[in-house]
Length: 183
Image (cartoon, rainbow, N blue to C red; front, side, top):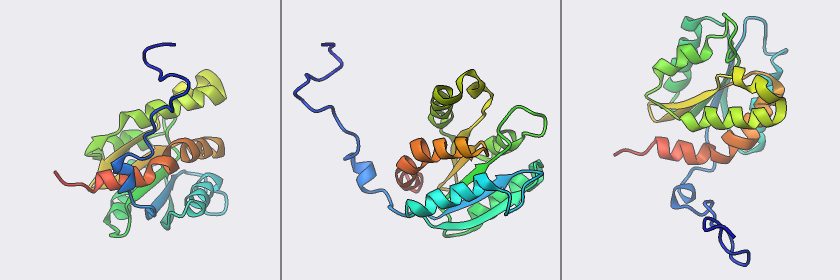
């Protein structure tokens, strides 16, 4: 038995009862923005999946839009989503790869007040388990702006499902609660 593990008859410490989580909101109104030159609301399966998974988890979707892979359009979508009083989080899908038109992370990261590095790191680690070394091409990220949480994830259905199931949904209330705290 290593020193870092509790004896087998003792339960491992759980963070689920942590007081931050206990005070976290159960419902986080979230805007969904798809970045794509080719998708519309009908063909945007990734954005539709985000919307569906949020709703199934009890988080109201307070808007869903599609914008072109243009920095101005992406910034405008961010500011519009954040300006809505009810919005507590925004999920961007698409434009996170390394192709020249993939500018979502480059556009949004400078607009964030704080970056949450662990999100991108964990997303790539989990992606690696699914797709191997191609995971290094993802530039997924998350951060905070104006007391609200912003996620930037790839637009493929597999990546959306992974990000929502493993990272976003388990921590959305916790992150939204922490983001609203004042010093």
